[in-house]
Image (tube, rainbow, N blue to C red; front, top):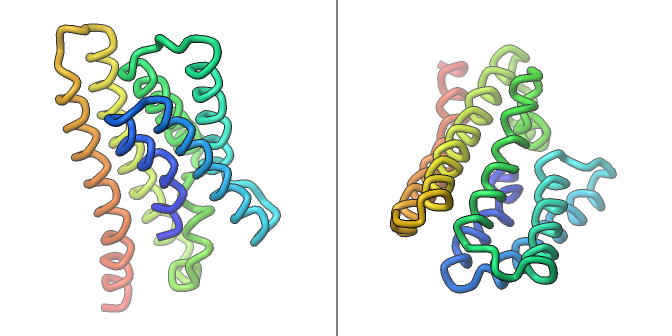
Length: 181
């Protein structure tokens, strides 16, 4: 569940972006600030996803708010999703799944055999990377081909986020049952 909280800024951004891109960016920035500070107070370390979301939404809110207010919603969504995709896939390529930092907080998962713990975290990290790859492609298509409807990319986002959240909440428990049985 800690991992889903780590994605709360983006989830809020995705939900609110249909109302107002500016509102969505500032709320996502505020949520990223709260998540980052809360985690830092509990443990004086910064997780890549938390810090990355904080910097990303701060920069996007400032750019859209002050430098380029005419930036389209699809462009803002594309930039946010592409940046988060890179934040997820680079550590995966470096053999350090980002989800490990969150899984260590769960005493049930932290006690698993190391090979299983790492394999589950590769799977969870890959699921989120795949979700953000799909969202980046969908919003990239809408950004660079304005004739495409925005609702298509929104539908891809909802499905991809739903699948990643469901996988994150269910797969570790399934893996735990397998080792117990």
